[in-house]
Image (cartoon, rainbow, N blue to C red; front, side):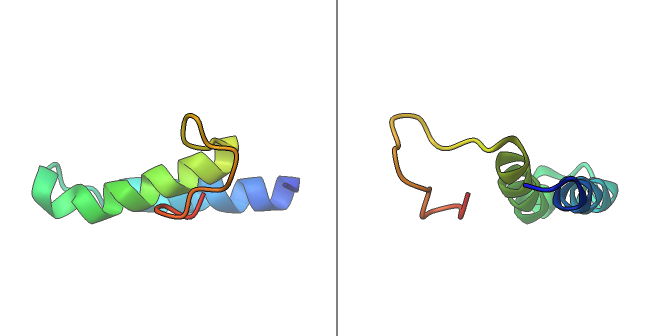
Length: 58
């Protein structure tokens, strides 16, 4: 992943975090998007998985 792509992911995460309200139910979708972006940023795959995660797209 290039430096530019990393910065874009970090910017998207920061933007989503600024939209959090503190209401767990209202924030659920935003937190899911943040989680997906952070997994892409860190190159993380689900445990015991040799293939990319279909559920979250990482």
